[in-house]
Image 1 (cartoon, rainbow, N blue to C red):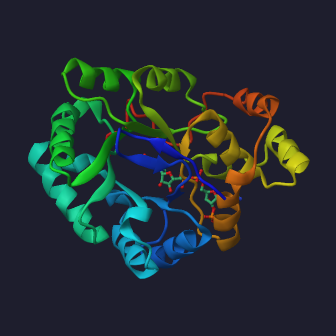
Image 2 (cartoon, rainbow, N blue to C red):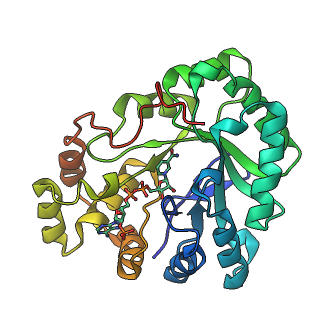
Length: 275
Ligand SMILES: NC(=O)c1ccc[n+]([C@@H]2O[C@H](COP(=O)([O-])OP(=O)(O)OC[C@H]3O[C@@H](n4cnc5c(N)ncnc54)[C@H](OP(=O)(O)O)[C@@H]3O)[C@@H](O)[C@H]2O)c1
């Protein structure tokens, strides 16, 4: 299985298929991430707020895999936005992960009512320029938030990690991303399981002798999303990774793209301000 690498900048690329650890119990995270690494994943997506960065770090250390062969993302939590708080939170995340250099750091939510993400992004640029993180990006940013960074004269985020799945393919935001050289990364790519029983998905799965989850992951890969499915179930961890071997026809991709219902399963970035 070959996972494509997509360019984040001239010198950094990201494996298009990764492994997410939201809602993975900190007590079992090491074991789960070890299983993911064993299955072949070389891209792990965590966040301070998941409470399991230490487990990810222990799995990386125990794996014996060379540091430069695994791509690690973590995220700045909302309460840590602002220049000094960002720099301190980054140090703490790196400590918990047991890493010297992070691959990708994301602003977790724009929390637009706080008005701090421009200052926070400037601190991210400093971390990147100092070589402490190889690439920087954002999560849950709307087109207007991305435009605010541009208007402030700051650099363009390399990637925006947003809720995206067949019921919410994010057509207009993806167009904005493409126009500005921003990769789209899909969180809750399986809609936490909600899309797996849809007849359009199960029909395509039967035609390929694949699982519905493999079909949905293959659809994300086909349309160019970076995709980070989560599972704590060993056979799902393995079979989701094998989705990279599945090639859908253009008609099948179009059938899945037509499932767009504008249906969110997670919070709306316009109104989500959890501290
Ligand atoms: N930036 C953000 O704000 C944000 C928000 C949410 C998520 N994320 C990231 O995105 C990652 C993925 O999103 P997610 O965890 O919310 O949802 P998801 O990957 O869409 O779905 C995970 C759920 O689907 C189940 N599942 C996984 N593979 C399956 C399969 N082959 N067959 C049937 N069910 C399957 C899992 O069950 P089991 O685990 O029981 O197998 C789990 O309940 C997260 O882990 C996190 O890294 C980011």
